[in-house]
Length: 121
Image (tube, rainbow, N blue to C red; front, side, top):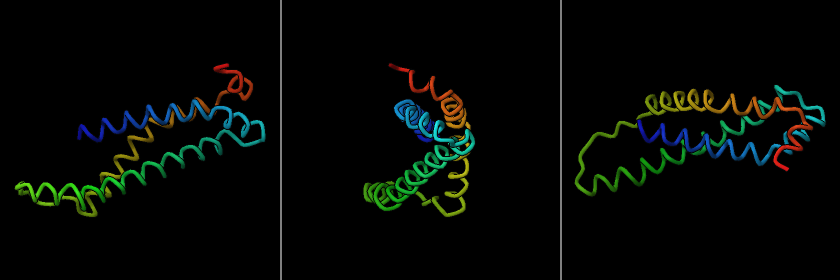
């Protein structure tokens, strides 16, 4: 839906800011001997954890707060948030996040440590 697409772009913007502010950490990890693949994996795993927590919170809020409030306001509709549908939507979300985030993570990690440390100064 449009809300999901908007949240992807919003999170992409926020995560690119996070990567930019953590470029020194990335450079230090690379100087310390962490491989490009390992460093990319750490930041990708962090993105997966953040998106999973956000997805779980949004599902809980929808099931426990939003739907009961809408039903109380006179809206009558079936609750279509069953486990298979939620799992399918989660997989689509992760696929979209991976497509959006992996290139920016890889670009930041592939920079030479000296370039990353002097960038922005």
